[in-house]
Length: 466
Image (cartoon, rainbow, N blue to C red; front, side, top):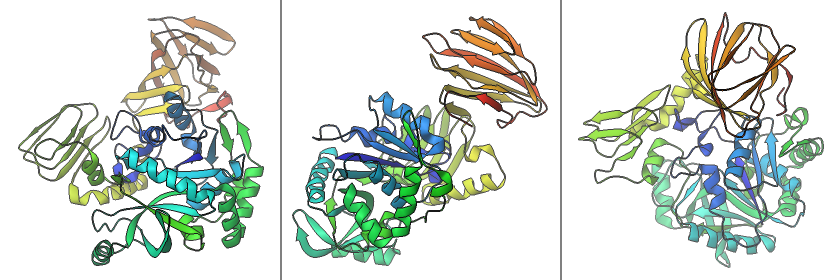
């Protein structure tokens, strides 16, 4: 069995923690591990499990690789989608990547919470056997409430081992309809998790969406392999229809079965959902970070950096990050995505970027920004190297705080130690490298008429960035 980790979401409803450049699946929301790490770690102990295949956005490739390496997982491949086309094409790419077409693919979303791991693993083993028998398996979550934010799966009366034949998939219902689904006992929440042979999925895709399969095959055949990454051909893949695996295959095949799963599952799609799965105090408050809560009940309060003090709150969400604070009643958190839409319309960086920005070589934190200057804290990993580049509109001053920096500027190469500095004039080709064995920490002060991150002309880059 090959785990396939789908990581294409942007998690806008969990803003300001989750943002387009660093969405919720890469954050430690419910434990010390990130959600993508939890997705892989909950598979530990399953037999005959192969290295996972990850499918993610091009912009998230280094974060995905780094987070898997942090838990000692080497992916078989990390497939980079140049554009998002929903789950049916993403799974097709993973199926094409499987070295043995008869291997079972376990399709998992990277942003789910599953508290009862034993129950989940038991369901996975049942799914593996059914997939070996050529069924296409989906996992139906036993509903605990008449949720209107999930699609539902109706089971038929015909059983297949511990599973049932799928009668139909239904869209997100209204409250009355959802209550009827729950009362009937015949419906499950659609989890978006599946198991089937790679070959069987491709056969069904060819039957129901041959055009989609043709484009996926061509895009995969013209892909470029770069270390951990499989770069799908954008000019071909961009022509692919965008559709879900449910609609394209699972609703139409006569081999779909559903396994009931009661494992305390959540897709953590909102702050209210995260409040539900987070440990709470005696007053129902989920408190994270440096929080002082007085006369407060049933609230989610998250502090990333500062002391957050709240008084007299009930059923509220307060989230503080280094560059934004969000406050909302817990029953209004679905509207957080409207804030993100407004930020995008206003072309504000807070819509997609955190103040701390991760790069393949390390990260930087913009600690102060003025009209003609910007100050960053920069951390470069041992052995890492920034691109050879120049800027048209800014000069830079570098001060080494910790570690050693190998600096190239023009024809000159210098080695800087702690408390030493250098100046990079506007227009000079330069490069920064950490030749040491400990992280390089430095302060960068930019000055110039334009300080945007797009003022970079790259001449050479070891990470394959344009």
